[in-house]
Length: 336
Image 1: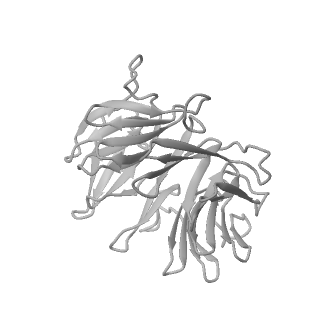
Image 2: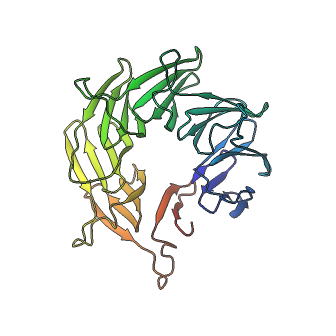
Image 3: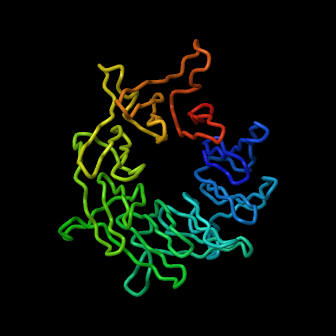
């Protein structure tokens, strides 16, 4: 679910793209014209257009009518490099950046309907650390950070310069392979999820510091999800969540235990929503929703039950969102 500047909530799903109008409480299905309509990301541009990543790049007008579907055309160097579009980012009015799996960054000019790309670095040219791009993060109008396989890339838009930071261990002797799955800004630093490790990246000097696994027995890819003061929440795709206090080194592990009904409903965590004022952490999983009280770490589980009115519509939780009316939205494998 993605909050819109147009007072909408976009719902990206396998069946397609939907939006919920907060003013009228109506849900609208958006026709993409595709046989496979799985949508991964939505971006609204300053000129009122809506762009959706659904393997290819879809462009809708203000009335949410499909006006263009930009895709790979064999032999056309101005088309999309590959029909594998993930995250989207707008750098200028009319210019959309699209992450691809295997073909770097594709930059799309809406007016000209053409693509240019930033590929992998070679001996004779600047470029990304890898063609396999996982995320884009921007701090301001000039700085763009691009997460890829084996490294972090800084793009200075004012000078059109790409700087590569390869993920190395503390001794700078070994290159760590693995996608950057998450990036969280701190004070002059980033917390990064790289493969199975958490990495602290010092921005001014470009230095890496590996944070040792606090629960080596748990499997799954790690991703930093929330950072404030000394608190860091770390999600593992198949191993629950860690609460890590970097100043004291305190670690609290939240995981599922078949013999403990007050534990997590599942270790396969899909989404997190932290409500700081209430000291409550909502945790969506592959099987059930969990409410964690951070003052005493007690857990309440919520499941789908057709015999109970008001229960979840489906146990597979996809995403969580709290709107301005203090309503909790729970996106599931079946309904919202």
